[in-house]
View (cartoon, rainbow, N blue to C red):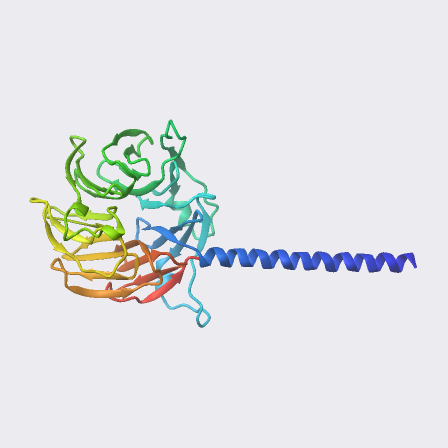
Length: 358
């Protein structure tokens, strides 16, 4: 009798354990699915050889895609999107706010720090155990002890310097030879959204509504633009913040709360104000005599300097936060934002395929 009772008890415990495991598994699956449903991709970059695409999200994860595999013929289930080669957690419980590529390292920015990851390990054929190669800590606010977000990174290959636009209103100039912060460019009165670099000139834009131009030889601010004070550019309903900037010798492109607009570099006057149905611009690039822009709208817009629409590419994201492109070894244009999906174009004017982050 006691053996039967013991056996029944063991079976009962085993069933209970099995049910608990099933519930835990279901809860985990639900949690993962919920995370992916709310996933937002903030940053992207290509590997130095152009063979890999990397994307970072709001959960601190980075997905790695081998482009030849992603763009080549592949077997996936019907209605199933192709995922990455692998993904890894770069910044636990933080966001991968920015990323750029140097010859030797993937560089990522998050709250209070900038990290370098060895490309040899990241692009090795096996699913590697990625360990950070180096970390640069940014100054903490003395009053609030808040760590500044690293919202945008640009890299100068010429002198191996990194420029970090941060949430404490500063732009930090960092030597990648030794990881030292050489100096900071101060002037913005609110957090920085975006940077653009051209030889010895840097352009920055901020939540404070200004665009600033910096002479990097003299380390000084040479010009300040306030688009929200120009009636034909301003959109008071959306605010004064400037979310994206790019420039050439002749032109400066910017947008955010104010309309996307193209300015003469010499006169600092608005030449074109673009009429787009967005609710705020987060990406603006000048590319081969055309303007590429996106933001709070489910499209990427390709425009002439005069404002004519060349292409309107639909996106998986209702808000686009990142666009990157390369010409070689494969022509690739990748769009990411408030979605678990990345939209890939090989002809820049239309979407060819969709990849999933995870």
